[in-house]
Image (cartoon, rainbow, N blue to C red):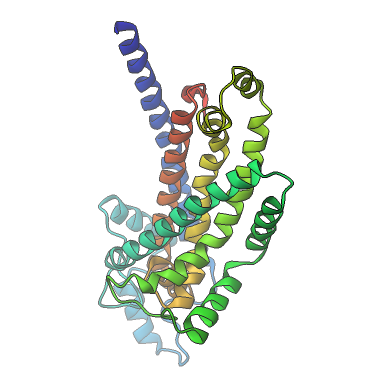
Length: 324
């Protein structure tokens, strides 16, 4: 018992050291994202106060002075960093009655619910499909599933989403085409399916390939030689190892879901972060774009850290202290 306690404590120290190292890398990465987003938004043509009819120079100068845009870029960047350190993303230049923090707080729950539901749907269907295709290798079920997976990967989200809206929203009239009513789950069905399709297809192909490769491993042959049934061999010996590539892909998959939500939220009229980011980019709303980009970057870093920790939990052979 003492030895097990020491091993458990040592394992915990490895995990803690790994998390600390990743955070030390994440901080400069996030700082670089902030600096690049600040610079690129300023270099983009146009400005937040550009209208179809040009503003008088006096009014434009007053607006720029009110928002601090008349100061040199290093001064503006320093002020923005100072606000971020206090949790202030600044005011929105277009939504005058809201701060960027309020817009993020309004859109983040919608985007997280959409992304989490899409990722959960993709994993809950993609994993069984990949396992089934691997166990039925070369048969009709394998060919059909992998054919559908190739189609799901090949067709982009901005094509899948309008097709779903056309079929299930307009022709069959089963689900709402656009709009958002808090608490009404039907509004999320089509966006969730549209986001989940490419991730589901990739997970199925990745799971199939990983399981087939694992089933050819020496320890699997040894387990079969001991007379273990096929179900036990797959579930207890092959599946935990075969899941590692899928878990590693979960971080980028979450990034793909969040990136795809930019299009999906706009197409289906959902008040999420993606829609705010698109509108902010069109309106040259500097602070709104930067705030959304920073939140997206922080979510990606956190999700990739969680994926690495789950990989280490599935396979104790992984030396966390050597991972980067």
